[in-house]
Length: 67
Image (cartoon, rainbow, N blue to C red):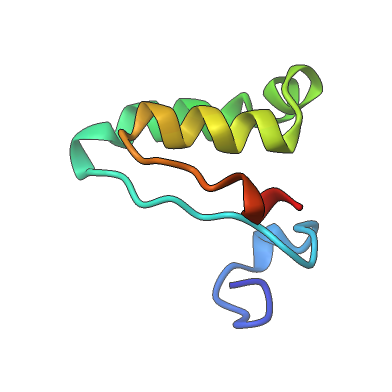
């Protein structure tokens, strides 16, 4: 996404990132998450967040992917 040039406002993204798809019904929740992302990341680390997102989505996360 970063290299595509389609999202110029996200120039500060790291080289790697994680993406999750959400339903259109979750639009407001996703927007609020993005707005508070800086504060949220000050509390939760990457690994904890991936585990939480997977759990909340009903997915089973394989810990091998975090190593």
